[in-house]
Length: 448
Image: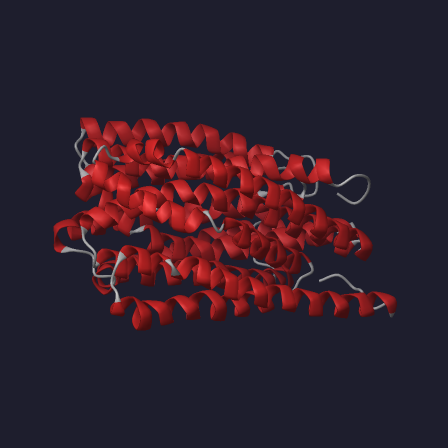
């Protein structure tokens, strides 16, 4: 990462990362597809209605995991082996303890959250069963994401991918067994997901103990190191909040979707599980920018950091455009995988067209945010996203949508909020990069 060509290395890093995200979503989509085909559209709606809540919880710790990625990457650029070791052992222990805390809080507030979201009575019990079981897996879900971040900090995106493939096959097999054989409906796919995440996090844990490089983990050395935790939190919490902002705004929007009936809920869930593939492509390049810039900033190579941003943004735009076109071309057949009802497919097509068409805006947002996190500045993009995305969407849901409560009017807020946020992020990045350049000229670059 610290020398030589960039485009080929970024692609070699980003492609497995994108495939990992896509496979994760395919396995999540399998949950929706299995219940949609074998348990009915009410069960499908029950699973889909939980996506914003789960995203809200997971995104916080995925963000903190990104903090571990940046800290380990920066230490790698500085050749600080002791710091890398402290980061690894802190990250692993924090993931497990944080996951346990989220499980406890989530179980307490599961039912009230679903009530606040207005989940209809005909799917409420199934939604609650799915959420309660899913929450039990938070410690291993968080652990997998932190472990993956540590592997990525060293340029290794293949190992997490291999572990995910294995656990994903377990997930699909258990989905079919629990739903078709044991007739467990939504609760069955949640249980399958928990077991699959236990497998993937366990495999990565084992591999961390067998690594021959700086990120090798020793179970008897697991400890929270205050300096590394502070650095991880300083970078990771704003990144997590940024992810949570998207999920929080989606939760608000999901409440409005729930008010439009179970058909719209089911269609929206199916469309979400297709359109999200765009996000994993563009997010992979955003994370590439974070890791590559993190190492090079740690090494004090600012010109290379700027080149990394330009190359990553260009590659992201090309990849996002390609996947968007494919999704738009094959939207109807993809929607019918989840449910054969023609009405569900037609409603889902509305969502896909409204969201996928504007994904290039989202790509620019991810690359800018990823680059700033690599420099160790995670708070500014988080605040901009909070105002631009969450503020716009909440205003829209409560002030604009009630005047014409249709699905199309509701979905229009997605591209509008992206435009507002992207423009603000571009301005912020230009100001920020000038400040970094002045520091470099004054010889004041010190890493994170």
